Amino acid sequence: MADTQKPLLIKRYASRRLYNTETSDYVTLEDIAEFIRDGREVQIIDLKSGDDLTRQYLLQIVAEHESRGESVLPINVLNDLVRSYTTQATSVVPEFLAASFEMLRDGQSKMLENMTKANPLAAMPGMEAMRAQQEAFMKAMTGGMPGMGSTTPQSDGDAPRDDEDLDDIKKQLAELQSKLSKMGK
Image (cartoon, rainbow, N blue to C red; front, side, top):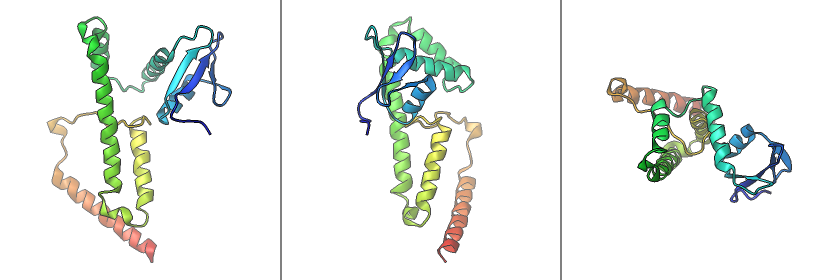
Protein backbone atom coordinates (compact mmCIF):
# COMPACT_ATOMS: atom_id res chain seq x y z
CA MET A 1 0.00 0.00 0.00
CA ALA A 2 1.26 3.49 -0.86
CA ASP A 3 2.49 5.80 1.88
CA THR A 4 0.06 8.73 1.63
CA GLN A 5 2.13 10.82 4.06
CA LYS A 6 4.95 11.24 1.56
CA PRO A 7 4.36 13.30 -1.58
CA LEU A 8 3.45 11.24 -4.62
CA LEU A 9 6.49 11.40 -6.89
CA ILE A 10 5.72 12.14 -10.53
CA LYS A 11 8.60 12.11 -13.00
CA ARG A 12 8.50 14.12 -16.21
CA TYR A 13 10.28 12.46 -19.08
CA ALA A 14 11.96 14.27 -21.99
CA SER A 15 8.83 13.54 -24.03
CA ARG A 16 6.94 15.63 -21.41
CA ARG A 17 4.97 12.58 -20.34
CA LEU A 18 4.29 12.34 -16.62
CA TYR A 19 5.04 9.05 -14.85
CA ASN A 20 3.50 8.02 -11.51
CA THR A 21 6.27 6.21 -9.64
CA GLU A 22 3.84 4.45 -7.25
CA THR A 23 1.63 2.83 -9.85
CA SER A 24 4.21 2.67 -12.65
CA ASP A 25 1.96 4.27 -15.23
CA TYR A 26 1.60 7.52 -17.10
CA VAL A 27 -0.74 10.20 -15.76
CA THR A 28 -2.34 13.36 -17.07
CA LEU A 29 -2.73 16.77 -15.47
CA GLU A 30 -6.31 15.84 -14.63
CA ASP A 31 -5.08 12.71 -12.84
CA ILE A 32 -2.71 14.88 -10.81
CA ALA A 33 -5.54 17.29 -10.00
CA GLU A 34 -7.61 14.32 -8.77
CA PHE A 35 -4.76 13.12 -6.52
CA ILE A 36 -4.64 16.59 -4.98
CA ARG A 37 -8.43 16.80 -4.58
CA ASP A 38 -8.23 13.47 -2.75
CA GLY A 39 -5.84 15.12 -0.27
CA ARG A 40 -2.56 13.78 -1.64
CA GLU A 41 0.53 15.94 -1.95
CA VAL A 42 2.44 15.58 -5.22
CA GLN A 43 5.97 16.38 -6.31
CA ILE A 44 6.80 16.61 -10.00
CA ILE A 45 10.46 16.24 -10.92
CA ASP A 46 12.16 16.54 -14.31
CA LEU A 47 13.87 13.17 -14.81
CA LYS A 48 16.87 14.53 -16.72
CA SER A 49 17.70 17.72 -14.79
CA GLY A 50 16.21 16.85 -11.39
CA ASP A 51 14.43 20.23 -11.29
CA ASP A 52 11.28 20.46 -9.18
CA LEU A 53 8.45 21.35 -11.58
CA THR A 54 5.60 21.05 -9.07
CA ARG A 55 4.75 24.76 -8.93
CA GLN A 56 4.74 25.05 -12.73
CA TYR A 57 2.32 22.13 -13.14
CA LEU A 58 0.02 23.20 -10.29
CA LEU A 59 -0.26 26.64 -11.88
CA GLN A 60 -1.03 24.97 -15.21
CA ILE A 61 -3.83 22.93 -13.57
CA VAL A 62 -5.34 26.10 -12.06
CA ALA A 63 -5.06 27.94 -15.39
CA GLU A 64 -6.79 25.11 -17.25
CA HIS A 65 -9.68 25.00 -14.77
CA GLU A 66 -10.07 28.78 -14.93
CA SER A 67 -10.00 28.78 -18.75
CA ARG A 68 -12.76 26.12 -18.85
CA GLY A 69 -15.08 28.41 -16.90
CA GLU A 70 -14.53 26.67 -13.56
CA SER A 71 -13.65 30.03 -12.06
CA VAL A 72 -12.61 30.07 -8.43
CA LEU A 73 -10.44 33.16 -8.50
CA PRO A 74 -12.30 36.44 -9.05
CA ILE A 75 -10.76 38.91 -11.51
CA ASN A 76 -9.85 41.36 -8.75
CA VAL A 77 -7.91 38.62 -6.93
CA LEU A 78 -6.06 37.69 -10.13
CA ASN A 79 -5.25 41.38 -10.68
CA ASP A 80 -3.95 41.66 -7.13
CA LEU A 81 -1.79 38.57 -7.60
CA VAL A 82 -0.25 40.04 -10.76
CA ARG A 83 0.36 43.34 -8.93
CA SER A 84 2.00 41.51 -6.03
CA TYR A 85 4.74 40.27 -8.36
CA THR A 86 5.82 43.85 -9.06
CA THR A 87 5.59 45.29 -5.55
CA GLN A 88 7.19 44.78 -2.18
CA ALA A 89 4.01 42.90 -1.17
CA THR A 90 5.47 39.68 -2.55
CA SER A 91 7.01 38.95 0.82
CA VAL A 92 3.58 39.07 2.52
CA VAL A 93 1.34 37.51 -0.12
CA PRO A 94 2.47 33.86 0.17
CA GLU A 95 2.08 33.84 3.96
CA PHE A 96 -1.30 35.56 3.71
CA LEU A 97 -2.60 33.07 1.13
CA ALA A 98 -1.31 30.10 3.11
CA ALA A 99 -2.94 31.38 6.33
CA SER A 100 -6.22 32.08 4.51
CA PHE A 101 -6.44 28.57 3.08
CA GLU A 102 -5.51 27.07 6.44
CA MET A 103 -8.39 28.99 8.05
CA LEU A 104 -10.78 27.68 5.37
CA ARG A 105 -9.63 24.08 5.94
CA ASP A 106 -9.99 24.44 9.72
CA GLY A 107 -13.43 26.01 9.34
CA GLN A 108 -14.74 23.19 7.18
CA SER A 109 -13.24 20.55 9.48
CA LYS A 110 -14.90 22.14 12.50
CA MET A 111 -18.22 22.42 10.68
CA LEU A 112 -18.18 18.73 9.73
CA GLU A 113 -17.11 17.80 13.26
CA ASN A 114 -19.98 19.83 14.73
CA MET A 115 -22.44 18.09 12.43
CA THR A 116 -21.50 14.76 14.00
CA LYS A 117 -20.36 15.37 17.59
CA ALA A 118 -22.40 18.30 18.86
CA ASN A 119 -25.61 17.11 17.26
CA PRO A 120 -27.70 14.92 19.61
CA LEU A 121 -29.42 13.50 16.55
CA ALA A 122 -26.13 11.95 15.40
CA ALA A 123 -26.92 8.74 17.30
CA MET A 124 -30.23 8.27 15.46
CA PRO A 125 -30.46 5.55 12.82
CA GLY A 126 -29.81 6.91 9.35
CA MET A 127 -27.93 9.99 10.53
CA GLU A 128 -24.57 8.58 9.43
CA ALA A 129 -25.90 8.23 5.89
CA MET A 130 -27.20 11.81 6.02
CA ARG A 131 -23.83 13.04 7.28
CA ALA A 132 -22.10 11.25 4.41
CA GLN A 133 -24.50 12.92 1.96
CA GLN A 134 -23.78 16.31 3.52
CA GLU A 135 -20.04 15.72 3.19
CA ALA A 136 -20.48 14.71 -0.46
CA PHE A 137 -22.57 17.84 -1.02
CA MET A 138 -19.90 20.03 0.59
CA LYS A 139 -17.23 18.38 -1.55
CA ALA A 140 -19.28 18.96 -4.69
CA MET A 141 -19.99 22.59 -3.75
CA THR A 142 -16.32 23.30 -3.06
CA GLY A 143 -15.07 21.69 -6.22
CA GLY A 144 -13.76 18.66 -4.33
CA MET A 145 -10.90 20.55 -2.79
CA PRO A 146 -10.23 19.25 0.69
CA GLY A 147 -10.82 21.82 3.34
CA MET A 148 -12.38 24.44 1.14
CA GLY A 149 -15.57 26.18 2.23
CA SER A 150 -17.69 28.82 0.61
CA THR A 151 -15.98 32.19 0.48
CA THR A 152 -18.83 34.13 -1.12
CA PRO A 153 -19.98 36.80 1.30
CA GLN A 154 -23.62 37.79 1.34
CA SER A 155 -24.53 41.41 1.02
CA ASP A 156 -27.02 42.82 3.51
CA GLY A 157 -29.74 42.75 0.88
CA ASP A 158 -29.20 39.04 0.32
CA ALA A 159 -29.16 38.04 3.98
CA PRO A 160 -31.78 35.39 4.75
CA ARG A 161 -34.28 36.01 7.51
CA ASP A 162 -33.28 33.92 10.52
CA ASP A 163 -36.87 33.18 11.60
CA GLU A 164 -37.80 31.78 8.19
CA ASP A 165 -34.63 29.69 8.07
CA LEU A 166 -35.23 28.33 11.54
CA ASP A 167 -38.83 27.44 10.70
CA ASP A 168 -37.69 25.69 7.51
CA ILE A 169 -35.06 23.73 9.43
CA LYS A 170 -37.59 22.74 12.10
CA LYS A 171 -40.01 21.59 9.41
CA GLN A 172 -37.33 19.55 7.65
CA LEU A 173 -36.21 18.04 10.95
CA ALA A 174 -39.78 17.04 11.82
CA GLU A 175 -40.18 15.41 8.39
CA LEU A 176 -36.89 13.54 8.87
CA GLN A 177 -37.88 12.34 12.33
CA SER A 178 -41.18 11.13 10.96
CA LYS A 179 -39.48 9.20 8.16
CA LEU A 180 -36.93 7.71 10.55
CA SER A 181 -39.61 6.60 13.00
CA LYS A 182 -41.50 4.91 10.14
CA MET A 183 -38.27 3.14 9.12
CA GLY A 184 -37.78 1.86 12.67
CA LYS A 185 -41.24 0.20 12.81
